[in-house]
Length: 316
Image (cartoon, rainbow, N blue to C red):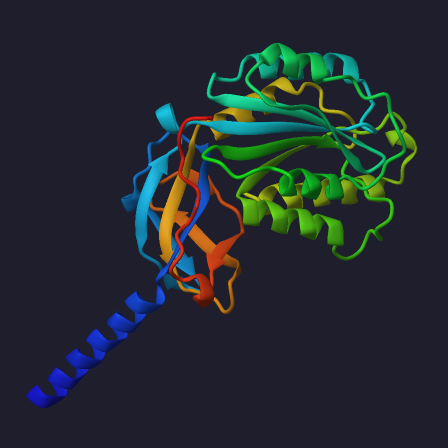
């Protein structure tokens, strides 16, 4: 019996050693406290979280609150020029939102015109410049907005700040059938996950939305929600019409950005140089809903000796 027990013990040690050795690729993911039920926002520690990859638990190495001297944020407002229904008061709310952002936030303003990205103001902490760049859309025919999201992310340099996008659009891509995946949406999601960009989406229709097939409008909202949720963000809409007010949703977005963490962990390396891998993050704190990208970049065996390049700190 003693010999059998020793063999079982040795086998257990071997399995534990294998699990430790395979979870050797440093990785990281942005975790947002999205919704909670209680008088105060909960403060998380790494002991409150679990993370798994293919159902296997992974070791957490640190959980960094992205606030205080680590609150640096770069936020792009990306406005679709076709979103021209009742824009006046809504864009005054956006201007107030810009002015209310903390000093650690740099803001850029860009537009989608005929499906193409046009940057009106690069990232700046000069609130006046950002506000002046935010022009009310004059309207154009709906074109797919998602290639512009991908272009914005691909041209966004890596630095020590968090990156987030607020896109305002009807989400409709006329070139894509209403059934099945939209390749441009999938490309935007992959770009956001790879670059660790959180996307928030606000549905705002074009002026002729009442004459558009409701199924087309609905599909646009579904794709917006898909993009936002897969990147760890949120989509805001209440009907096929314009939001009654942007203010409560902008306040919700601000609350999310004020309650983010950088979760570092050791993942199982993938083949080649790396790949987007699905990981699951859960909280042991009751009544807390976490918002996390569906996938994050995991380094492969070829890059197993490299460390993540993101270090949260002050804006440059």
